[in-house]
Amino acid sequence: MTLRTAVAQGTELLTASGTPEPRLTAELLLCHAVHCERPYLYAHPEQELREVEWLHYGRWLHERMQGKPLQYITKTQEFYGRPFTVTPDVLIPRPETELLIDTILKRRPHARVIVDAGTGSGAIAITLALEIGASVTATDVSLPAIRVAQASARELGAVRVHFIAADLLTSIADNTLDVVASNPPYVPLADRDSMQREVRDWEPPLALFAGEDGLDIYRRLIPEARRVLKPGGLLALELGIGQAEAVAALATGWRHAEVSPDLAGIPRVLSCERP
Image 1: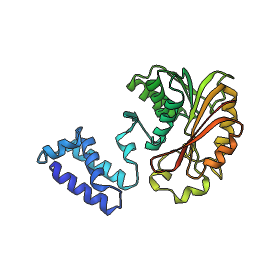
Image 2: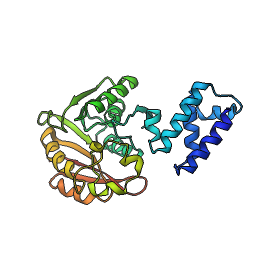
Image 3: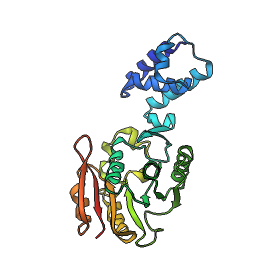
Image 4: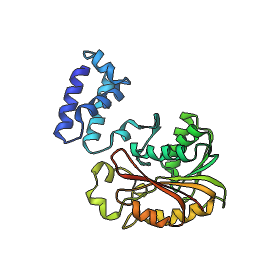
């Protein structure tokens, strides 16, 4: 089987299964099997696949047709221009979360001590450490998630990120931080049945759902952040769709609150300062 034929057959199978972006997905899976970049497929369309490459490609096509996210198959997702390791133990980093990084870089470019609460893949913690040069503590209740994030930290040389198995900010001392950052679980349980199957069936529920209204983690995290931040310290939170007003109300009394929209115009990040 040649590369051209493999792409064509993979595209046909993915199209028939209703998989989004079937040709792009087929090309990316084939590149993963052959260990090449996409331009190589077009430069060498008559190259024949080795048996092991064909076997891997076929298996990964089948997994994608069953709804397994592409990132869990390739075990990587780019975030802020860097490749991060992802497995079903962690939420796949989303482009809109990059706004959280931008907000912190804008409001606290010289922060020295930061905590990423509920780090998951480690994308936020590692990116902040590398972009700012700060000391970043990353917490998570999931030990498997911490192991995934530690792998990315090693690969990316993020030596100033320290990982703690803990629930949100419970292990952090009072009045010690310049910034608390978090992309917490915020999906209401009532939304489960209407979610994309790739998310609902594959990504970790612990990283997705937060009670009936999706606000349970915010209710705990905002008071904890007030305890651990220094006076004037910054809290930056990613928001779910339609949650900006409710989360801002939970931060009543904080100073200089700002809600920043993502590229789609959706209010996506709340940032505010401890009084």
